[in-house]
Image (cartoon, rainbow, N blue to C red; front, side):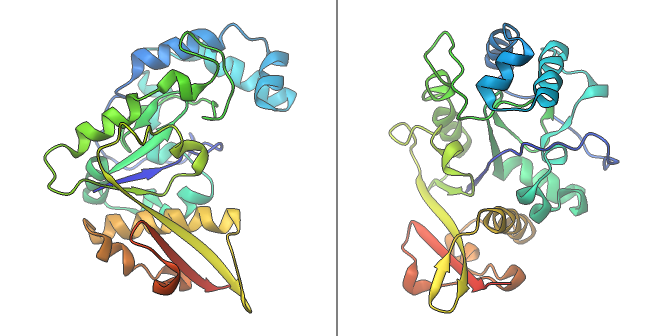
Length: 257
């Protein structure tokens, strides 16, 4: 089983790091191609391309300039410990044990506009490049065309040898769209998290993001390998609603806080 997560816009390069072995990103040569394109843009152009403030656009132009193919240890950190935000607040990776983090390394993949796919302990340099960004490149007009079938092919390699390959999608649709479903040779199960008010059930974006992180933490702590183990998720009041679920779409609900 392989769990997919989205990255986060907000980053944390300040908090202390646990003592854990790290790895190098697998698609650095592809990242170099994208950095080369991004370095052509001035701050005002980045602001328009990515809908950023002037301050954020200047920050990210500086990041692209500082980015290096050979990952500098002093300006990088493991991806799962660098990403911040709602999903990663639910995951609480810094509170996981080294054994948990090493298990994550083998069973979790973080989709990325710049890196394609990051393993949790891959050393990542700070960047901003959402998958939906319409960045013209040598392969097309956007990042979906740039990555093409490469991400799905990588996931196939990760799942090779499993009798029943399973991908659990906890990523947003923006990022999961980068996985070529025609090329992917695995069953996909999606987890949906809804808040209940009276008779109404609704996905609230920031709460659903946190719930994805909570589910990822559940998977890691339980060493989950089956759909049945996903179904037992009950963090922060969520519970599986079988009547609303299908084999490919697990719906979890709780009373709205």
